[in-house]
Image (tube, rainbow, N blue to C red):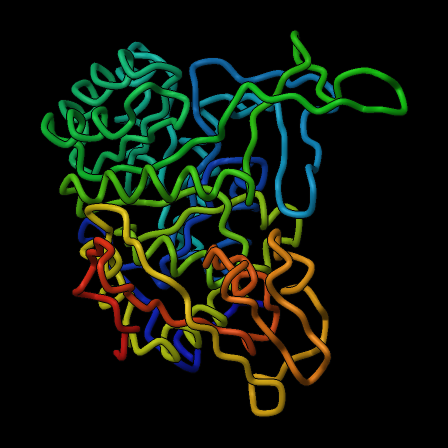
Length: 391
């Protein structure tokens, strides 16, 4: 069944990226679900605005057994390689079939200069709307970019790794040379997971290591994406750890106009794109944003210039919506024993409280909130942008 993004309630989540119209800001990034046309089409029909092929190389990959495993509830470790089918199959079948089904296709090409020289033009001839270049090293990506720009007329995206010493600097170089867009970040690693029942690494790579993706890498990716956006990148695909609409809006607010995801679609099924589309449209509307473009980058002017010294003034609503559930998480989370709850009465010892804010962060219903109050005589900044966004 094809999900109709145009019938969503809330904000308009259709968008445009490098002149190409997308039905939603969500992109199926490169990975197991994009193994062939069938996977790309399923994601498109579930609401993905664009789909990225597995990374196409001159030789097909052969993967070891046990090359993907779950970590916690929203993350994965994997030692999977690139596409396990020949390049010709992508040009003759997978890309044309996905395009015929209406998908916007991003052809992932890696990982070396000879491969970029040999493959990008055939990707364009097959119907790809974009090229995404993937490399193991920064030094290789730049010549790959030059080669691709000489050979194709479609937009070229450079995918960056959070493992590199300076991905923000690399993004700047790529844009100066002519990259049309940046995608960040790739999975992080190497990482390790142990199978405790068999006392061995879970992955069967040559060293037992794998690469981390999913919710665990989101804070790292958000930081890198925010810095790339603050350095002037206007066409940015934020990738890493999106699991819900709130995560997606974070990426939009730090400057990513398009949002890539894969791990959560593996864990919950590719149809999860439909839920993300629905929830994001509603959430954006609730926050006062009526389109994707109106939310992109709104957090960037509000980054602090220095530490702010202040205190928190707490507000507690036990009876009116949102109601307190009497879960006690705020009390349990207080490292300083400053908070007590004898429902419906909550007390805070201001002499013990350090205004860390964790109690508010763990409240599941939103019944506990806080206002930042500047303390006279202490340095402070962020005088602008303190108020909540009103739309």
